[in-house]
Image (cartoon, rainbow, N blue to C red; front, side):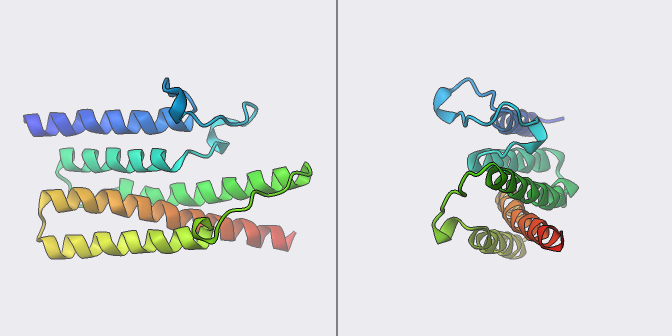
Length: 169
């Protein structure tokens, strides 16, 4: 194992550790903490957007360290996004059942707008890989872009599934 692989593995552990700590709300830096309902189990907590970016960079570092052309971890981002979308809708339904009003968000932060942005990220990643000719730096950026994009698209897909299931009940 060469020095480059070791550096990327250390970076992968660091980025993924920050993402998991943010998801579990265990970061030691108070400004980066996002207080959540302590009664929620850890798998129902919504990570902040920068934790998703940190996880994407961690997987990209792991991808670069292992010299793989394609990683199934990239495709798991879509499943993670679907889960986050389902959980977000579940939390909104729980809040509505308790009589709380849903928070109003501007149109550019809606699920559909984020899915469109995610689709643009995935398209940019594909174009970057196609034009770079297999350059390692381009592959690193493309993997991070693809993961962020797939999580955004997956969140929208999860929200749509939750709305369809709720409409059928």
